[in-house]
Image (spheres, rainbow, N blue to C red):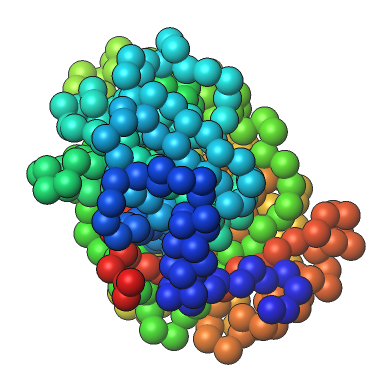
Length: 405
Ligand code: GLA
């Protein structure tokens, strides 16, 4: 494994290792029967940032950085999960689960939140004992929490019970994260993890929760560059951005009947209502309105293989997130700067909530190494932080794995 890259073990080796960890748990490892395996991918968003909670459009792909859980259901109303990554075991009771009784903050909250939300949605849930591992770098903005939630929907499900379709299941997990964990995220991360398609990005309409798949051009690789910078401000700044957008909608709707979200607002409508909006709110709204249009343009450019357009659209999105939405950071800006100077890098921008985390890059096949070398050579000098570079592939969404026993 070269420096700056994370290894991705083969599926069979990974399954064997996780099963062995499960079998090594102290006695009473669940009901008899084979150990089952579920997986859920992280995601990278190609474009359409902060649009999901504005009922807009997003274009993420599920990626081959995944959380896996090896487990056996048991008859106790309890979940006990060991994290191979953190080296600890956590549990919670399925009885009396409620946001009010949530204990100290821990990664197991995402599982409990999902169980709570599935119950609230009228779905049965079942206790299990399991071991999980993850190849999604924590805190990097590649949605490890959403992946844990989506893997949990599979592990908690009652066998043979009807399962809501991916978008509906994503909405259930999002509700758990909003109300139980208390993070006011949109639906994109859960949706991408649930509905991903190998070799494709997903065009998700966050107003209708419908999606279409968009093939990734064969000649392009997806490369994620991690800035290694903290996302400390993320939650409070994220919530502030949400309320600024909501205020924009409220003020525009006073004059424009029928406006329920920024999805109902186009450039002309925004312009004729600017005088009603505080300057900062106008800028936030402008980002959202134009970003929705960039998503559709990106889908067309991917379809047509228009690399120049992809470069322009990613650059415009990044500049808008930096200047209008103000969620970029000096580290993200430096990472994009370094990337776009590399021959063969087609498009580069920050991805996810921002304030740190990762950039997403479309790179001509064969140029991935040049991008990695440039980042490893220049980024640390510019920022003092150690970068990581992941060449990723778009994969299928969460589900149960059928691997040889
Ligand atoms: C985070 C949230 C998503 C979305 C992005 C920004 O990843 O969880 O719902 O809002 O930020 O596009």
